[in-house]
Length: 267
Image 1 (cartoon, rainbow, N blue to C red):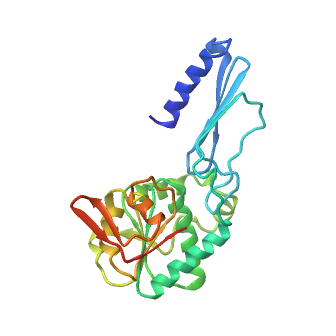
Image 2: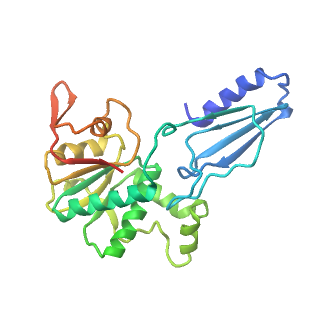
Image 3: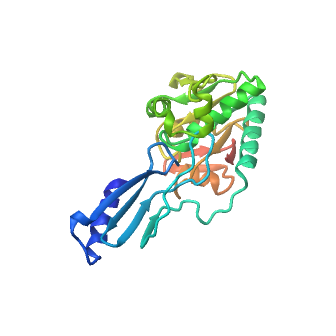
């Protein structure tokens, strides 16, 4: 069930629980969350009762998107996702410095960096902007790759919907589009075992299946390589096992075990 479908189910239940269920008294309001491109908050009012339904939201701007905004309002009910609600994290700038340092050190040592991401999530676009800027400042020549498919399509929408992005991206748009990455290119599957250092963004983000798992199987046995995880991982996935400690073996199923010698970090 999508967020919109869940919302309308909740709206139906909410309207039944109020004294007024006249459809003419109900109205909806959508607002950009700006945690990911196209995400929205849903506001509804039925009679005198009001509610907001939202996924995760970000109240501070980041490198590629602005902050979530919502009008001042009096609510009877707020339903929100809260992935990191109980997590106290280091400052964003400190995490970015550690991320860039770990990636640069790995590449300088001849290793490869795998960054598992969701194709339409915020991590890939924000980290691509971060790396692309860092590559320009440091004049680095290591290749940065993104796996094809939804990833390329997502970048296309970021270019099209530039008005939804952060103020910094909008200000630089007159001279260059921040999503026209100078140092990022498409990755071909035949290059998985190619020699030499590189950075690869691959989906899915939890290394639960697909291309990121295929690459992980090939790169995990080398001590030179680095897996850096930018997002939440569900228990039981390879990503969660890497976040939970420093495993030397990971069982994918009863017949498949991966030798894990690579470095692992959370960004």
